[in-house]
Amino acid sequence: MKKRNIMILVFMLVIGFAAVSTTLVINGNLNIGYNEENFSSSVVYTRAETEDGTAEINQDDKNITFETNKLENVNQTATLEFDVTNKSRNYDASVTIKCGLKENFESFSEYLNIETDIVSPFRLESSETKTGKLVVTLKKAYDKALETTAEIECKLVAEPLERDTLGDEYVLVYEDPILNGADPVIKENLVPVTIADNGEVTYANTQKKWYSYENKEWANAVILVENPSQEYVKGDVIQESDIESYFVWIPRYRYQIFDEGNYTTYIESKPTESIAKEIQIEFETNAVEASTGSTKGEWLTHPAFTNFDVNGLWIGKYETGYKGATSKETAQVNAMDSSKVIVKPNVYSWRNSTVSNMFKTAYNYERNLDSHMMKNTEWGAVAYLSHSKYGINTEVRINNNSNYLTGYSAVEGTDQSSYPGVSGTTSDITLPYNTETGYKASTTGNITGVYDMSGGAWEYVAGYMPSSSDASGFTSDELITYSKYLDLYPNNSTMISYNNRILGDATGEMGPFYHYEDNEGVNRYYNNWYKESPGFVEHTYPWFVRGGIYSHGFLTGQFNFDGGTGGIYSHVASRIVLIPSKI
Image 1 (cartoon, rainbow, N blue to C red):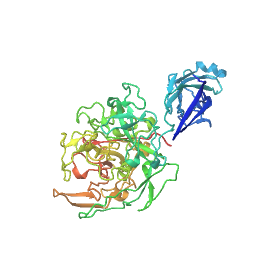
Image 2: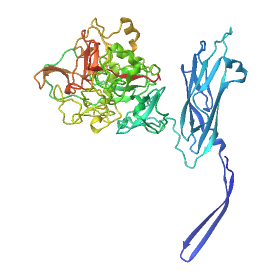
Image 3: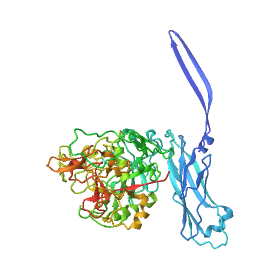
Image 4: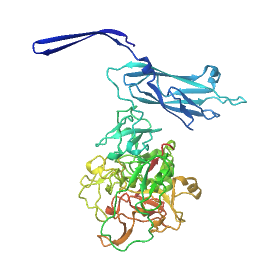
């Protein structure tokens, strides 16, 4: 392994000048050996987490100390998740891990089962990080009168493996400087990915640049099916059939208030021009004091992030689909069933369900990631980011696929200037997400953004006003239980109570609002940005719906809003949001 060879080094330097030549000879010894001290500091722990956060890495990054909650019941577990990293550029490493109780606690072995999910030995390449889990399970009830603390000891032994090339320079994890620390959080079942223009999905190397919000390339992640066809590692192309759900990271930001949204009426005329504008956004983390502006020109940390005190949200990249549906009709199911969730392109949107069933399906989808149905303010957070310099910065093109297939976009030249607009299923009318046309239906104008925010199906969001006409299926007690996942609006709201908006929800701030005759001779209500439909919740229609439907032409868009009963509609879907951590 260690080489200690001695070589005689001879340099011969010949210098020619006219008829005179001189030869210089240098003799010396070159000692070549292995730098044991350097490698011993290269393999380290770079992350340690328990369920309640009681894990610490010591100063030299060689030891983890942690303490579990009390194990009292048979099959109760305590878990430590850790990352081990090889910072060396010269050597790969062969790592062996062995865990067990310390010698003076071996008597507890009949009560505890100790396992790790990494098979030893494993290869840790230069600059590579691998994640492992230590799981301790109480396999037999402990009947002693006094509580006892047993100590576990895990030893990771790393042996260097020779390389014949210099490895990448170690980076703990890639961070986008423009985000100011609000970078994506990868936890639990989330797999970071990059998506090629043709839709090919690759397991991302998070130590290298895999997203760039300055370049409108938003971070994406997927959740794999329960039993994928293979075990994937970074650099692998992930088969589409192994993907269950796609998500897009929306980093925490503050925005400059461009309109206070204090409108209670509308203007009976047509505006001469749109006032759509680039929304000014600055990214931040919850380590800085949140901005609390309320008037035009002031800055406000978007409430979608302060609601949960997080540095970002994973948003369903597409409307939630119904797993196994083979037609738009078979995706119309009024049920609470998280096993049927699928968030993918080119699948049938799950429709015809009550808000309660949609909400509970989303809530139970990934509880470890705090999954829930998209709130109205969370819709606003995506819409505002889309209309900044970090997004498409214009109206998202309509998904006009009349089969309610996700991720589609209207073909250039199809008439969307009227109501209804041109819709259908053929390629001369609508094209999928992974085409030049499809990109225009994304919040970024490229394949990395969020789709279906204009057209497709209407989307119920978790925002409502109290009403005796509520058909959502929620009981009054459930509305209280789930209150932090619901945006509540005043019970005196009417269709034009735009002043009851929550700043950031992309409703009242899209004013002023107008009422005039359209191309078909019908008087309708419009916002002033892109003539999208603006209907606030009211007693009969107390639940917000967003985005519009595939056939509504110019009325659709990321700033469209209206009210629904909360009951079942064959043209209304929903979307899932994940909160990976409360950092």
